[in-house]
Amino acid sequence: MASQAKLNVLMCGTGEYTTGWTGSGASKSDKKIGVVGLTLFDLRRLGKVDHLSMVGVNGGKFPAIREHLAQNIGNVYKDMDLSFDAFPEEGKVDPDAYKAAIDKLSPGDAVIIFTPDSTHYPIAIYAIRKGIHVLVTKPATQLLSHHNELIDAARENNVVCFVEHHKRFDPVYSDAKARASTLGEFNFFNAWMSQPKSQLETFRAWAGRDSDISYYLSSHHIDICCWILQDIAVPTRVVASAATGIATSEPYNCVPQTEDTITLLVDWQSIKSPKHKGTGVYTASWTAPLKAGIHSAQHWYYMGEKGDITVDQAHRGYDVTVDDTGKTWYNPFYMKYSPSESGHFDGQRGYGYISIEKFIDAARSVNSGASKPAEYDTHGLPTIANTVLTTAILNAGRISLDEKRPVGIAKDGDRWILQ
Ligand SMILES: NC(=O)c1ccc[n+]([C@@H]2O[C@H](COP(=O)([O-])OP(=O)(O)OC[C@H]3O[C@@H](n4cnc5c(N)ncnc54)[C@H](O)[C@@H]3O)[C@@H](O)[C@H]2O)c1
Image 1 (cartoon, helix red, strand yellow):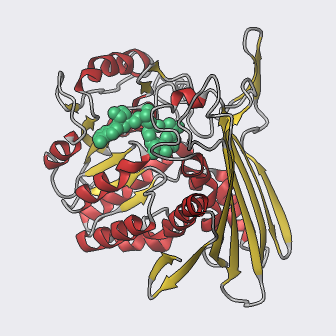
Image 2 (cartoon, protein in one colour):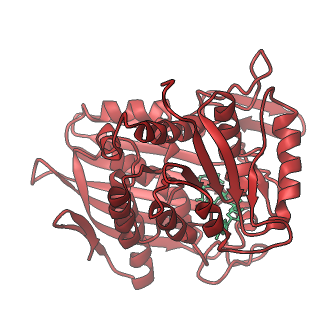
């Protein structure tokens, strides 16, 4: 490992997930100091990362972001170097600033993209074509055709392209995947994921316009289901249904096309047995009750031929009750923010951290010549090639809602297409 060079990384997006800083101040969600920036600062402390940069749209936000990071990271954890170059420069507003920021990188450097869903594809393809390794948040793209283009471009340019599906690194989910593989043919999967109605205020700028709650939340469990079923079954048909009326009413007043709760009903066909078919039901909502003691409700049920699995990741047997705020269920298995006994950041085992570290490790390994990008496809990691069916289902769901019809998923040669 010592022979591997440190990686230079550009963070695209300066919002909640990257810094914990949102347009309306510090995030009030469970990511108050973000995930990407904190993880990269810590990986720099540990010798895996070198030069950092960050690009948003409005350069005027950076003084507040730097202050927020200094207070909440620099003052809290020992030995954190918080330096980074910022794009666009102060006083400038430029939605294309990512191009200038990527142009400053060299082939073999990396970008981590946490920007609105519709911008993932243009940023990712721009970076890949310059020989830059890419980690893009979910949903990787909104269109299956764009996802296929990223697969091709990553192969042509010999770069690592992962989708940041951190739930694959949750020990319960990865253990459940291993157990599901012993349960024979697939029969039924049912997932629920929701966030409180207050998120409609946080997401007002894009909710219903730029993306929907299925792309935003169901992407998580659709990916987990696709991962579990990768050698067992393939999706063949998607029908979507949506509940409406809350997001578009007082006090939220989202644009008229905003759905509250979206359900995708997916037919699955066994790979080995023509007579075995399964059903997947994936529901996501951003109109769940306030004050439920959790930020995201998330549970699912898997039934195979020889047994079943039940997972509730919102309630992990750890709750805290405080006079003023009531009961809250926390999840330090994702991001653990409390410092170590030595005063350093202590969340290296959290699956939010591991997900980013796996990407950094892969990019460094490829740069050193120790591995090739295609090898990661065989490791069950969320590479761009391994996540294509997740995008196929999400895109089919959107078409089904818009065109009020079932949408088929099929293979044309070695490429997945929608019908
Ligand atoms: N916040 C979470 O908990 C979370 C978790 C997992 C995945 N995600 C994904 O992250 C993405 C959004 O990130 P967020 O949650 O930090 O949201 P956010 O709204 O807080 O931040 C989005 C950031 O993207 C920037 N941006 C917008 N257009 C850009 C462009 N053209 N070039 C560069 N930057 C641009 C904005 O300036 C802003 O800093 C979404 O795709 C979402 O699905 C978020």
